[in-house]
Length: 82
Image (tube, rainbow, N blue to C red; front, side):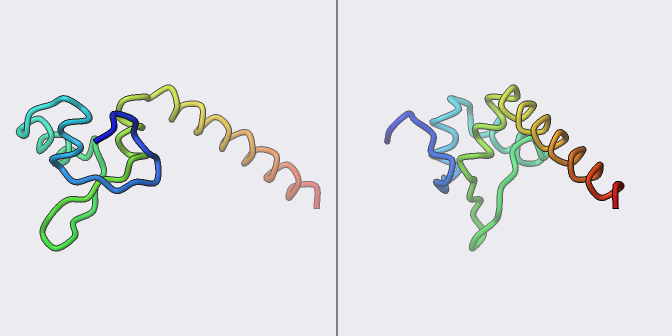
């Protein structure tokens, strides 16, 4: 398995555990607290690569949120002019 996390890839809990280099109990805790978002498929968790990246790189998320807020502000200003 490559150590590069693909944004569009779907990972199992075992793969995620290896990528994050955390124990099984730590991964379960991250999932339970909602710090790592996942979907259950057939009773097993599946985690998107973008969720793993969000967890390890909060700066990336801050940049994305800021871009969204800037775009939202432009749209609201445009609508208010009507």
